[in-house]
Image (cartoon, rainbow, N blue to C red; front, side, top):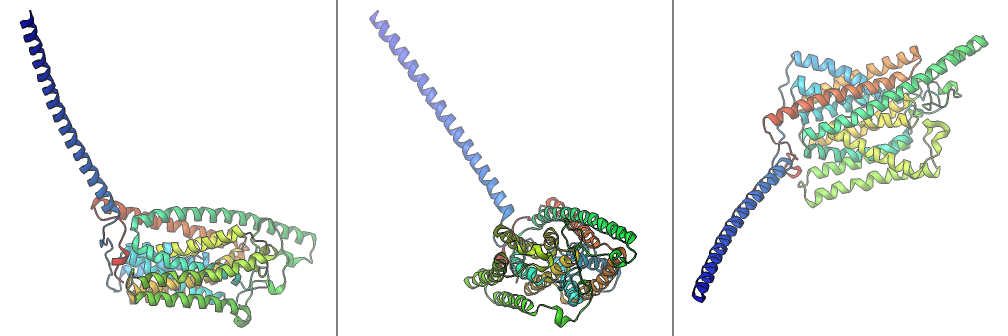
Length: 477
């Protein structure tokens, strides 16, 4: 029995060792397979991560390709001129410049690439805005004894607007077109909706005023002056407002009508930042000097806007176009408005549009009358747009002959548009026309620019083109 027991125990032990060996071999094989699987997964995940990173960023890779068609007379120039004329006329009246119409026209009809179209659009905005400012320099506020351009309002917004332009131009180089398209659609639809609602509110207020004037005329035959249209102060809670003959929308001497001190400060800020931009162009991109010149723009712009904000908060000055309501300001309001000024500049430089697309609706929300809102937004936009033109010129982003031609078109259109709309306001007695023009221009810009951007994005996806960030340091200056 013992012998069989030993043999049985030996057989069991041998069987156990055999099974154990098989299990060890199976486990080793399993571990090897798992290891291979994990390595495959890691490689796949790594490849996926690399592909994702390559989509967003490739060092030294530029998706931008410049397209400048030859300048020759033909149907493209004729159609582009017509569209540009109406775009400039509507854009300058609304105080937004018209860039949302210029850019699709320049790209789809004339044949420029997207970023060159943006640059030429800025040239057109500058020409139209400068002509509008010249037209408004001797115009008066519709209800108060002051210029139609609110220089204190410009002092608060224009310096930070110019600062935002520098940021926007840099982002225009860095961001891909589809990123700009998404941002554009969101901002424009919001601004258009807000402007439209403000237009309806102002229209209702004007209707109340006209009915009140008609009622007073029936009660008193001598009250014929009361039946005349009185432009709105901008606050929907105020139905009437005392005015004098001097406060009617009329022309006075430019020397007496311009706030030369405020204008001098604004020109000084513009000149200093322009000088920094020019100096930056002669430095190596992304060098220490390059970034230092960029950072120096911040104290220049913020010092002026901050001083104006403090003056408003302390009551040393006021936004005269708001009347007595222009004296009560909160700290968070002033910070928010300055931030909106920077945002307006960033959007303007990024999209090749006027900062008025944001400033116009913002001024209306502040209770500024439509005429003053349009004039002041255009005044501030002249500085910011001209800054963009200089920066785009330094980046060699547009052909000069084309730019000069379309600047002439925009200048003439701006003067014609201002004259016709002023006459129309006097005939119809409704300044809300300006607000509806503003809303319409922004909405058309959202549809046209958004549509073009989406079409390009789909085409780029089909062609498997690079759609990530551009390399600012490798950009052609």
